[in-house]
Amino acid sequence: MKKTIILIVFATLLVSCIKAHSGGSQDLPEAIQPINSTISVPANAKFLILQQRDYYFANSDWTEKTLLYSGENSPAEMASLSPSATKFVYFTDNFVYIQDIATKETVTVNKEIIGSIGGQIRWSPDETKLAMTCATEKQPSNAVCLLDVQNGQVEVLLNEKNTDKFCSSNWIQFLDWSNDGTKMVYECFIIPEKGQKQDFKIYGYDLVSKNTTQILDGVSQDLIWQFHSASISPNTNSLLINGAGQKPIQQIFLLDISNGALNQITTASDYHSSALVWRDNQTFYAHKQFDQPPYDESNFIMNVNGENVFQLEIEGAIIK
Image 1 (cartoon, rainbow, N blue to C red):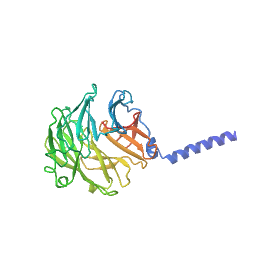
Image 2 (cartoon, rainbow, N blue to C red):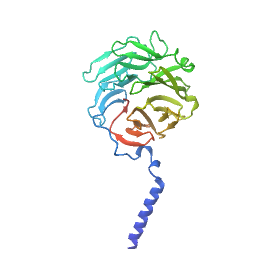
Image 3 (tube, rainbow, N blue to C red):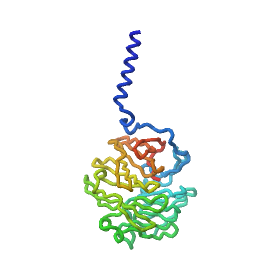
Image 4 (cartoon, rainbow, N blue to C red):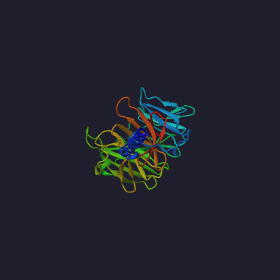
């Protein structure tokens, strides 16, 4: 009887110590945050996946995985899935290619583009135009361009002539196009010295009013030292930003466009975190990769508070 009582007391003390040490789920390592079983993704939801240098088209449960482009010999600089998930566009070696996913037929659509310095390529909602960073013979410096997918005609939207003083003397990079087609996001930046904080600014462009608004001044904040990419939420009120602080581990940041509030929502010091695709206005698809060999990776639905709420059985990063 005495032994039984002692064991019960010991077990109670052990449980109490574990609870006191854990302090609840907020103190758990980011990789094992609790998962909310009420959130899910339809098994037939289509995603564009970047795995190493290869682009795949797959369901959310990693079934019907189809290789769209192999980058082993010539990596694509940027790629995107059309809103209807029927076409795949990619840019490589100064050419834009569009592939019909069902038939595998691929066509070249541009005649003028002579270069790009990164950023994203995005479809218009009606799938008639593509937006990207580009340079042409008539526009030798970088600009935000619209490319007509039928005839390859290039329209320059934003360049050194119709942007502010900072953009006119530095690099311009297209970032994202809203789902409703009314807003674009682009960046102007200075390439930094190694280990130095990057000087950059993020802008929103309204395609209805043709007006540009500065969204974030990189110099005025100290969270982001290196800016990589940004994605605009479905309601156009928020930006997901991929970047790094003074320590060069990529993290995810959230910017409230309405008030300029900037928050870092991932903090793991041994995982690179990134996100390009919103699920809705409160959640998005996040990719995490351990920064040491064997570079283990995982995909989650994450909410705007930085909590992993659903794990996905997908290898590689969801980019569209």
